Amino acid sequence: MAVATIAVWIPQLIYWKSVTDHWFMWSYGDETFKYWKEPKLFRVLFDAWNGWLLYSPIAIIPLVGLVLGRHSNRHSERIIMLILALATYLFASWWAWWFGGAFGHRCYVEYYALLAMPFAAVAERAFKSTWSKVVFIALCLLLIYYNLGLTYHYQAPWDGPNWTYDSVWNEIKRLF
Image 1: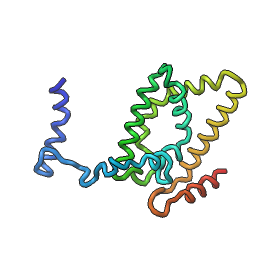
Image 2: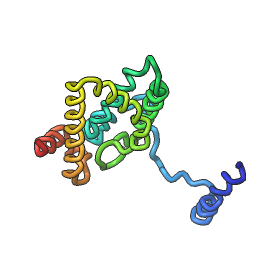
Image 3: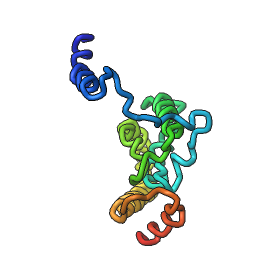
Image 4: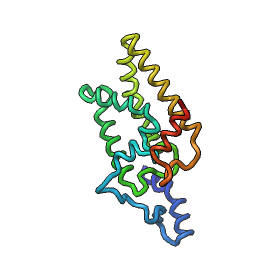
């Protein structure tokens, strides 16, 4: 297993050596975790520059599921909360906490699979009565419309000094 792991890296190491005359190459240059002691947590989650929950508010539903299920820990809610907390801290500590001109905070995409069971747990609770089922489905449809509508209207870049909450609000008004 160790040989296989090393073998996978050999072509990359040879490439770096041939191009830079060094076996290892730090490709990020001066990019660092500049905000390690002052992470931009609120901004990563809610800022006009790619705030995760601002552009993907349906993710709030599984976050609620994590909080509601943390005591029973039926779907490993506590470990998922820990993973998301650590990931958010790392994202918020990076020098470009908004991770470039994109739509929403792309770094969370890899974590969506972890949110499937908490989302299903909230849906399961909502489907216990007709009224809460209708409200849940309507809320999901509204949030999906919101996200897809903003995706459809997206024209890069939605960051920088000219992109503000007013800019986001103007896009939301266009949807509704």
